[in-house]
Image 1 (tube, rainbow over the protein chains, first blue to last red):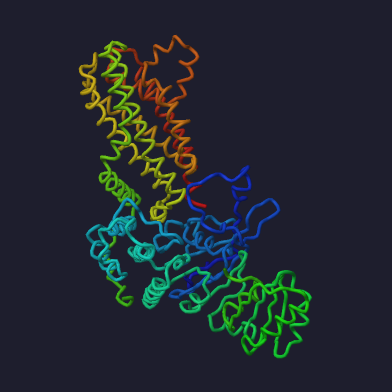
Image 2: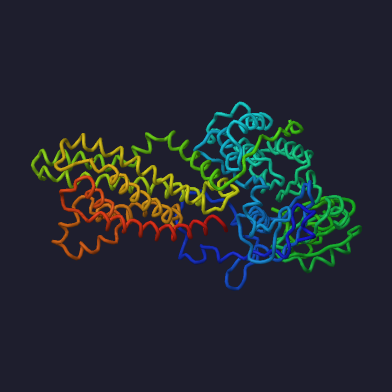
Length: 347
Length: 271
């Protein structure tokens, strides 16, 4: 406990194993009226021989009080599970997690008192108006209607929802619902705010507006923990970023320090129509290429001059009888570091 | 806009379980009050239509005896009550845990999550009682005079209605947390419909002695006890089960499904 007292959040050896996804047990797909939500949340996770999904595999984190902390990783990295455990909504299979020194399992009620949560998908109370969503949420945390009424109106105004206070939730746009979720997470004055992929599905304008709001919250000295799979978001907003993949912590530092760790030069990634292994030597021999590696059908090369090496790489591929299907360029960044750490792109 | 987000924190009450429970209940009262007309239409339409056909039309046509309405009225009240209580908790649960995740803001309230389930059950029980109290006068109005009907044991009526509503609310909690969104149709086709037909709502249990196998089979159906209990207190001169047996059975059903429902609720609430 002692080490966790100064920190807002501590996790030690956090593990989470989910039972095999249901679809494995069913005989076939069941027709559903709910639209598909894209990739399965387990798509990037490790699975065991029995089909269990290893979402977290011994995660150690420490978030300081007042810090804006980012959890960066692709789908299935374990980000949402981490948030789920820290917000008492998911039970860990092993290890321990503390919020302000309180064990999230043994002192779940006390932890909830101190946190505000903005979920990945807005889940406002649709039976209530915008204002009532805040009033009742505040009431669950001990605030009387009169006391929280003025504050609700004020927060809504500041989040650009001042003219929607009496609106039904269904009348709000996606971005407005997301801001309502932020208002709800703030109304009970939590010490720590968790945001799970808060900008997914927002248009660029709404995303920038949300960034402003988050910067404002951080400026007030609140502890913010945000998951994202957008490099730029983590880079722009966070004091420190933890890169996670397959339930493990790969790196944790300030964005600047992480970027310094990124391999030098611009990353050029060619996606070929077949394995790229036998092209590595040819790529390394090209003038100026710092390093090259193969990952399945992907050939990666690093070059200080940006895209200059592209013609040479294409020619090398053609000599080997390969077709180039796609070319991706990335300046030294969290993204190139991420790829060098995980061998995968983020999205 | 962001710098101004610091708003003075309002005074906070001591967050006791009782306070949170009350706040959760007020949330449901607000929502139910707003949708009261739809709620009553949804839950009492079927029993009232049945009243119209079997309690008004058929007796006038001479197909059924006039005194059938004294067996029918308590049964229809039972259906309304059971239907309203089950629906009030099961449907929101299926949606909340299935796709809207709306209940999450309540699961993040600083109380034991079991209290959230208890509040849902209490609110659904109240809705069941409201449905029954609404159907009683309307059905009586449609049927005309009902032989042997008496509301002089009003305290006992309230007791049976309350015990019955509690039993069906916890059944709703269980069903709402085991059934998935795609299977809601199943809930009505395979659970509610047989429950209504074989719940002694349309005929008194005593007369089932002509089909002894069925007379024992319907004892597993909780609606049997609600319908018979309402006969015991509303038309006490007509054949009915003894009231203490009815209340005891409803207590057993409530205790059983509360345990089952709470377990499945907690499984859905905490991953």
